[in-house]
Image (cartoon, rainbow, N blue to C red; front, side):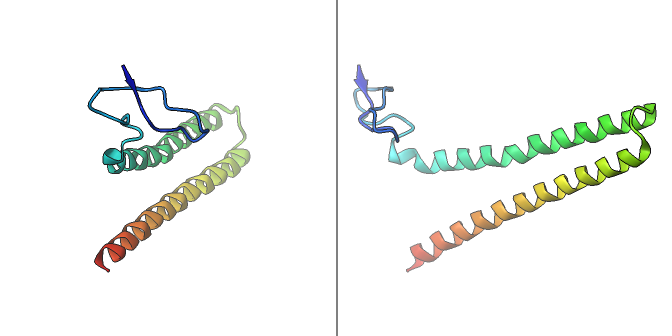
Length: 114
């Protein structure tokens, strides 16, 4: 069985098995670079979704705790402000990533046009 001919970032050889007609595995084959990039981009976008779900759970739990008297309303108000700040930071992070991706795409288009 043939092994991938590429080296990993730490300098060790890739141990993945490839078909006899192939030289590189999927992770190292340059023909799949764009697909890998799209998949990585999609994975990066899913992180804020998980963080948003966590914030939603926090807010729901806080609501229940204020209603049950476990947390004082004043403390609940402060915690809600903190949760809102976290949500705004997530939105800013999303916008920044989106802007960076658009800048990269624009740069690629400009280079291709030249």
